[in-house]
Length: 62
Image (tube, rainbow, N blue to C red; front, side, top):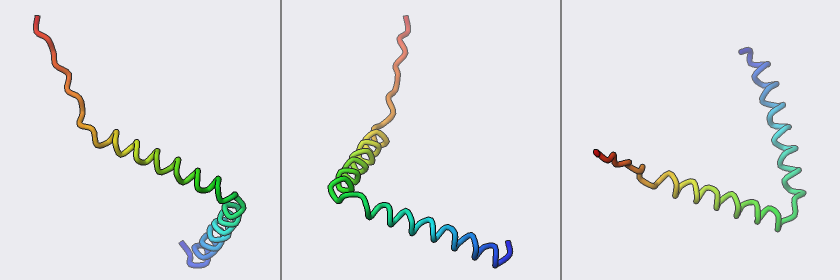
């Protein structure tokens, strides 16, 4: 990839990230806190599910 193309893509992505950061700053602090808490609970739940050993099914011989 040409350096100028790479630089242009980088500048576009940086501008996009700045817009997203500005939008995030407009969210009320309480909503941000709630969103973070919900996200952390989802991660915690996922970690619990992943940490459980797989269940082994026993077969009955009749």
